[in-house]
Length: 240
Image 1 (spheres, rainbow, N blue to C red):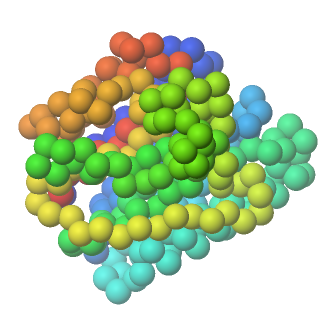
Image 2: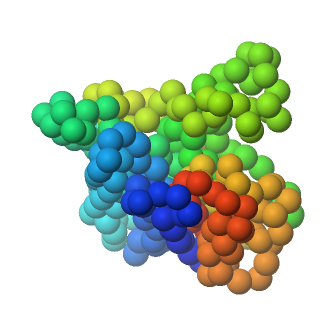
Image 3: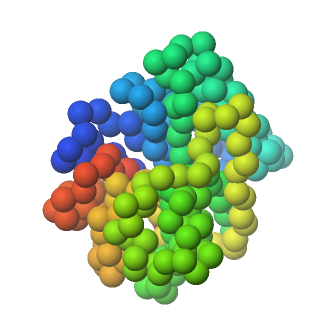
């Protein structure tokens, strides 16, 4: 397993409210998560930082425990972080309504567990084909699902940045969880919308099928920057 990640403030923002964590535990569980904060001048960064810390701390408590349940551990950490973010917002009007997306994976052998809330995404590349594993929790995705707009119209819809689910906006949050089998040669990408809104699937595959995984996040970010991304940009890549 090889893992690489990178984040960039982007062309327009004064602060990077994205956060990522990635690593491999001594018990051979690997992980990668991206969080995209939202709400207030500083609230988004506080929310994404808190969520990332809660998840990372919870995983490393089990660093050498070969029998721990990574799914239960991550979901419990997200639940605790959600409550902490919400309570902080309730106590401080400046941060009220802040929250963060989350998109990430834990990989244990051939089993990959995907965790998701918001419009950050998880993709997998297998045999040079890109597949989106998560489904956005967003206004435009609901419109697409209802057949009211097309996927192409969603790309330029004025409400395309409005999400319907985030960690910390309310005291609890529902996290979508999926499991899939992974195989040698698979590439997993966890990324925020500052990337996915400004790079084509073709360019994504072209970068994710190059030989050097450690340059992939920077190359993805460079491509989005070249396409005038207006948001923070974050990518974590795991090579099975």
